[in-house]
Image (cartoon, rainbow, N blue to C red; front, side):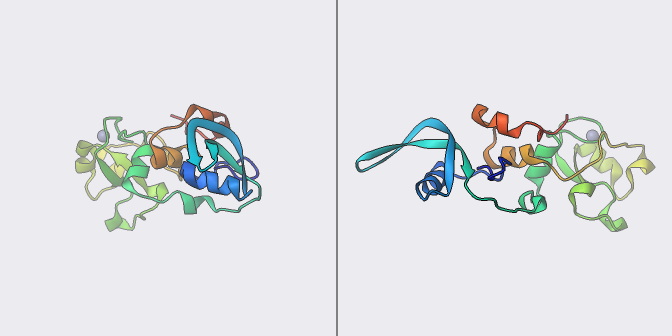
Length: 163
Ligand SMILES: [Zn+2]
């Protein structure tokens, strides 16, 4: 579902999208090959809809911090060594006042996580491959549905995470 400004807003079910279109709250930009049947009519299931009105949504409200979202943001890779991530690591340990925020949480492999324990990365010779930040749109879409439909890609340009 796109905002009136074409900004990606969130992922809704096809049924919810049909309701929004039937109530004339949204227009269909792309239909999928699925259909909804009701007595006397067949409605193609929308794949991309755009709201007819503008909604203001603070971005942080959409990207909730949890293990699955952190792994998606970090490509399931340890942010210290690049191995497959198994844990969530607080860069500045919570015992040292580190916060549970996007800027202080990264995916990590078990060896790096174990090596760090309650210390700062520099104290054990670890460096972050990139500075952790609040994820952009592509991450929360992948978290919501597991994949990005080809129809959606043109609307997500400029929102992808750099690898
Ligand atoms: Zn590692």
